[in-house]
Image (spheres, helix red, strand yellow):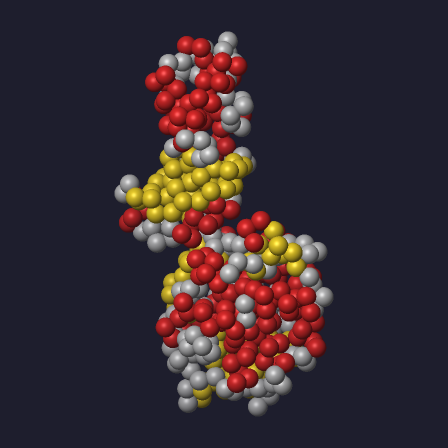
Length: 415
Ligand SMILES: Cc1cc2nc3c(=O)[nH]c(=O)nc-3n(C[C@H](O)[C@H](O)[C@H](O)COP(=O)(O)OP(=O)(O)OC[C@H]3O[C@@H](n4cnc5c(N)ncnc54)[C@H](O)[C@@H]3O)c2cc1C
């Protein structure tokens, strides 16, 4: 055999898998199709790399949307503190920000990549870039090696498949691993976009393109039932909505999007969630007193961004040219209702390629959660986003990649 372990894919999961196995004395080769390791890692957190979250295990399980229980052993084997300690030992101290989000102190994803490369080199992992794996070779239901696009074969008794999902394909994550696993009898839960912008049906959204709203609350409602609620920042785009709370919402309601239930799905934006209706009405009265000689359209500058005023008034149906000292209690109440309930319909999501995460992937029923070894092919292991797991934003997805990377590498050394 050429090596003890072949790791396919040099993202965070593959890099940590390879170095963990090699640190235990195994001969390991890491095969990456790009000319650099960690291309997706480079763009994470807008280049700052939200590498993990400082929350406790319960918090992790609350933020993992798909198959949290499956990840229990991986997160136990290598948790957020393990990751922060490893990065510190490799010369990359971390800092904690709002929402317990952990970043490298330097704010540079490239420092995380350099640290992981150092970890690979110190442990003598053979790194082969611009090397595309075509197929995993199997004999008698046991891994035998891999076949490259170049027609070359590399032999090893163990292979870790960590080729990522299918989003941001320019980074190299093109879904190759799904095909390789399917050929070996694995089933793939259909890959779908998660943490993805939402497309809305209302034409007026376009007029607000580029407008960011902070401290708003947004509810997803199906048949009058609230299915999810998020508070924070969102942005209007030419197609609909994006921004942190929209991305999270897209994952929380993915079961309703692009299904028959989509027809009943509504979003309701509360522009002033900190104020109850009565408090908001009192606030309006104060503003109307201040601007008493003005038209309604000119009396809301203290309450809303300029672009939003025209839309709110259009949706309320009120006469924008009426002087505010002539606005009735009933009209104020209509305005309050509009401010607290701007309704939107969702017609779909942006395509998979624009999603932060691919939901779906290798069916977890076919993977041993304690080792991440395939239950179908001996010597085949999985790590990272290729597995049918996904989480909300906040560093959880990278921690999943690192934890499953670590456990898969450790398992190759133990078996
Ligand atoms: C814009 C953006 C921002 C993000 N920000 C964050 C963040 O701040 N925090 C967070 O927790 N998560 C973030 N994520 C998610 C995070 O990047 C992924 O969860 C993580 O990269 C998954 O790691 P992975 O190693 O499983 O896969 P990937 O990082 O996708 O790596 C897979 C690797 O396999 C290689 N490969 C594929 N096919 C082959 C083949 N046939 N042969 C050889 N190599 C192959 C690819 O080139 C790639 O390098 C972000 C994602 C995006 C798109």
